[in-house]
Length: 251
Length: 249
Image 1 (cartoon, chains in turn brown, blue):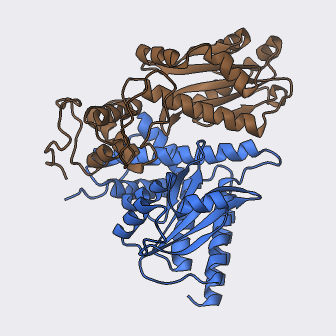
Image 2 (cartoon, rainbow over the protein chains, first blue to last red; image 1 turned 90 degrees about the vertical axis):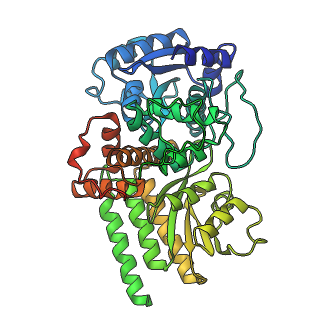
Image 3 (cartoon, rainbow over the protein chains, first blue to last red; image 1 turned 90 degrees about the horizontal axis):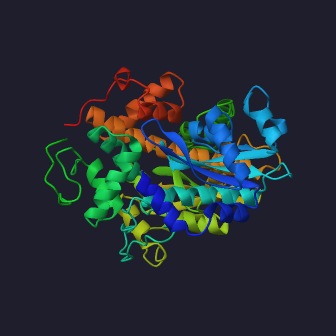
């Protein structure tokens, strides 16, 4: 996990939080990643200092758009906190008012059941979020999800059904990992999580690592898993097993 | 199907959809049923619905049947195919002959896979909301049979119903709410693919059979597919309570 965080930091260069806040035309932004077995939200970067304080507050209390976006996996948009029912976030709302936070939106980072973190955006005095801001924030959340998934040092080596000889580019925000649009990739991820007894997010990493290690497109490896031509087990070393390991005993 | 029977059937479908649009309805299941109705009413072989994601690419959200082969064919259209053209121009593309390479030259991969799946023609109908296109309805035929103007108008009506279903909670002037619903629907779709894999592995069945059992269980108990999927993946649901399909032989 630490490696992921480091690579993301390295990948951004400069102050990503400040750049994001400016790009989104927001009063502040904070990015937290979910770490460890209990998926604790760990702030990665914040700007300005108000954002850091608010981020800590909402995750300490477990109240607010950030924690709610993590729980539901859907964006939570409350650009005007004055209009939120007090009983929804009973402790957070008065505290936010004291801090001068007017509105907050939370954008989850993840793929399906895989939750990797949340981007919290503090709105300015307008107490609204424009269509452009929303589109930019979701695009940013998606790019950060991709960066996180690629940040393990694997991935980006997959073609997408057509030959693409591009080498991994570790020094910048990577593209959205290719192949994730294919249903078989998500099906294979589910199967591998059971085969290895690991959480779904780790299953996807193992699948991508295998594709990377065997220099095959992600979708192709996933199709082998779904067709039970390839099985992930503890006895199987992802990096050395051949792409067509004769594990067809099943099915 | 004779016209009057079809009109009655269409009216029934609108009532069915209106009844489904209660708070917290299951958008994936509703779109699946709509796709199945397209097959029935338009006399096509298969139907699928694609929605645009945060990257501006089309992603599959539902299909008339969940066979992975059909899902994979639809998924190819994240970057090429008639639905991409339909999405970009906002205009329907109908009666596309998949057997003529000059027609399919712009998207050879899609055309090849469609032919291999047994389809000879395809149609793409836009999912439109006011002046915005949010996705496309994709129809496939395995026998040569042209859709007439009436059929196409009907297909557009069904596509409009799908759009309403996806964006039903929209409030005035809040296009970000529309975007957020597209996003939620696509997240649910991926969750369902993930749970198919989990169940297929536990039960040692195909992902297609696993999904059939999963959906029957959810429907019988009025559970949303995505909610049940999330619980299963989180390990908060004992999957032994779901009757497993027969094992693959």
